[in-house]
Structures are given as C-alpha cells and as structure tokens.
Length: 187
Image (cartoon, rainbow, N blue to C red; front, side, top):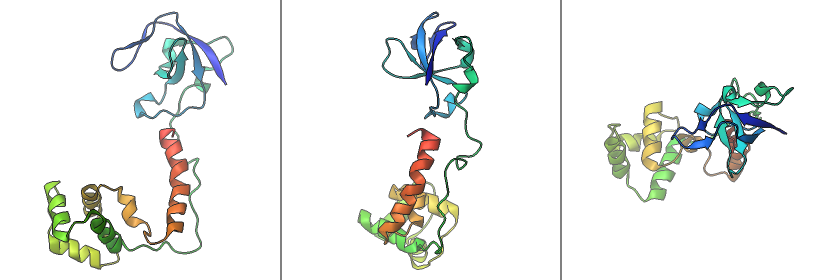
C-alpha cells in the first residue's frame, strides 16, 4: 500500500526543518487524510530514518515508473458528509435548548448572572434576565447567543442541542460524529 519515492530536492517543513535531503528515499503512504487543511494536495511520506510521516508536494517527489502520484495525493472530499452516512431516525429529534443551557450552567456551579457576565466579557453583551428567558423557553435562540453561551460554558455548541437526559441520544451522536471526525481529521 505504498511506493518508494525519492526527494527531487531538499524538502523542508513549514517551520524550516530539513525533513529530507535531495536524493533521500522514503515510503509514500496512500489513503491517509491530513489533520491540517494545508496538507490537502500533498503526499504523506515516511522518510528512511524518520519515525513520523511528513507531507510533501508531489512535484518534490520522484515516483517509480508506473506509480501514479495522484493515487497518493490527499484530496479533500467534496463534502465532509460524502462518505459519512447521516443518522436517520423515525422519531423526531427531541431536545430542550433552555433545559440544556441550564444543566450545563448548573454543572459549572454558576448562577445565571455569572454566565451572563462570562458571555459579556467574551464580547456578547447579555444580561441575567436574558439567560433566564432563554432557559425558560424550549426553542433555541439565534446563533450568536448559542455560540457565546457554548464558549462561556466551554462546550461545543452541538452539546446544547442534544437530549442530555437520554444516553441513547449520546450513542446516536457518537455513531455520527466518530466517522465524521475520521473523514475531516483522519482520527
């Protein structure tokens, strides 16, 4: 599942480290997804003598006769959802944004005023009465409020939309998010 490649000229990391000198031999890997977006369009290579993989532009590598560099080049999927099946469910997704907001706030041991102050200090001006109002209604507020509340609470915004009272809901979320993380992050 790889090909021996030769560095056409010195290959350096973004930080300037000489990863491979011209003429160095390495093993190109196929089917890997980079963690960093700037590595899309590059080839993962384990250079002889190195323990980890390094990403190199295909133009800096000489492939053996008959090996197609394009087969080793990491290509960003057209959509991160292209190879991940979306969870389909018969029942409607139930959640209570206000209740989730309150659960997360109380888990931190904060009164409503403390959450409002943290959101305001992070650049989203709000008050204790607004937090109280959002906790008492079942429909979610606008995206800016959701993002500010999630940042203040230290949770991903999607957590505020899960059914936090149902462990099966977490299982469904995990079944979707793990393959998505693999597609997007190679994890």
